Image 1 (cartoon, rainbow over the protein chains, first blue to last red):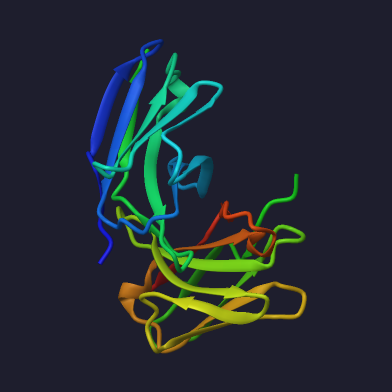
Image 2: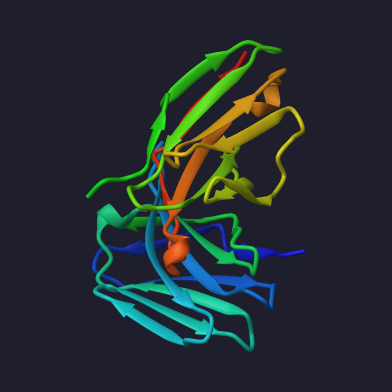
Length: 110
Length: 114
């Protein structure tokens, strides 16, 4: 079955770049997503990338996809305290179901 | 912009009771997904509907059922509730019929079973 893994925790200083990594096992993934979840809140879609792309940039966010290694990363430039949250990567299989990783808690120190 | 609406936002039920959660997708979105997120867990896919037909089924217990109505809203019916059903239940919608696979999540319904 599908498996999506992320490191549990990342701490950075305000103004630095954050890089959150994710690995997945399903080679039939069509799209890969990054969601942000603040405490007690819903899941906010940040960005997604089609599986035949290797990079997507959207303002402060850069997504890199290494399909050969099944590795996805999210880089947040100039990280702010408001970026503190849990970040989930998710992959969509051919059946359009999302499988989420366990989430990475990003803590931004002032 | 309109977002996914879920109601109620909070629900407290006792064991063995039933609960109905409602989801109103973003206008013109034809696909609805339900996810369950336990405390400290990642969201788990339950079930989805496309054009009012069940599309995919995940780890949804037999005690749960769901449907999508003609106006595309969806309801998740949960019976014989157990303590372990306490979780955040998210609904997401997407305009899949238009070839768009972004899933937009609602704010969630927090169900507490006592």
